[in-house]
Length: 151
Image (tube, rainbow, N blue to C red; front, top):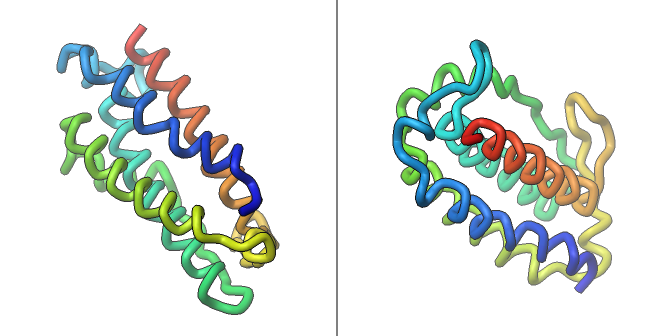
């Protein structure tokens, strides 16, 4: 299997999120740090939605021949869907299930499957490896965002 460090990074995110939000009071989770910024609960809802999108993209890349991967407007999704899941713990539970499913797939990949290609509507040609790197970077950025929101 290729890219074990990437998979390990993805595996670490759920426990990092649990550490961040499990002891935070609801008021801290739902408070936006500044006007126009996302609360920790909103970030959690976004992470769960993004995990859905990334999971579908990677599945298409592995099952289809050079698929076109749709972009999406993260802010529009947050505005539309985050209010329906204001509980950070519920978002975390959804994220964990989706992440576990993605990890199971990644652990089965042969070396050549990491190099399968999709054509992202905004970013252009990407390999599965590059998409998974994007997911890992996305995790890191939003973990930092949650830390700042809870500070």
